[in-house]
Amino acid sequence: MWDSAVAGKSDYDALFFPWFDMPDYRMPVPDDFKLTKDELELKEKFNLDDEQLRWRRYTIRNDFDGDEKHFRQEYPSTPEEAFLVTGRTVFNQDKLDAMTHHTRAGKRYEIIPSPVEGEANEWTKVELVEDERGELEIFNDPDPDLEYCRSQRSQYVAQCYVLPESLLPRQL
Image 1 (spheres, rainbow, N blue to C red):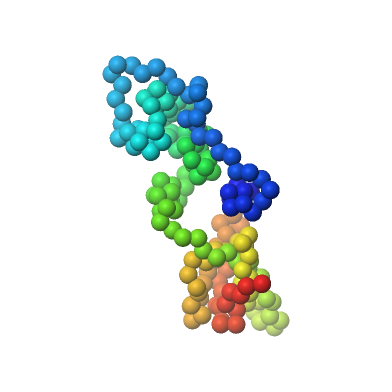
Image 2: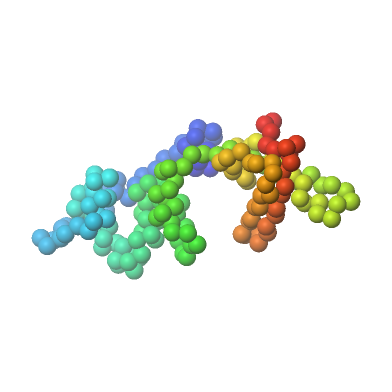
């Protein structure tokens, strides 16, 4: 819903309020307070003051046992941080976040199985139909001479498709 609202594709308005807009999220700064490199970057990026960064440091240490990622999810600075997943992930989330600034959007497709009677692997025939809410996002046009695989971890399913030219993506 968030992405649709941001893109203007729904009747909802996308509203986001970063933690540092809250006037209560401040603490007095002791004389010996020194900013870390990361805090200096945040100060520059979001125009924060030392009282805000003191509150942030205190909250990470005392409310989140030093887990900055958990803080970023619960007290986001950006809409992207609001959707972070806590816990152990396979890929380094900070690197993935940095990479998103250098990627382009792909085309989304719905995968429509085309059963073929009498064939042992009926699920290998598919049709890709362009659909902005589709489950598959393609960043480059597929090569009809290659085999492609799709995996859904939540269902522990992997499906492989050979895409003959007749089944390459088409638009409705």
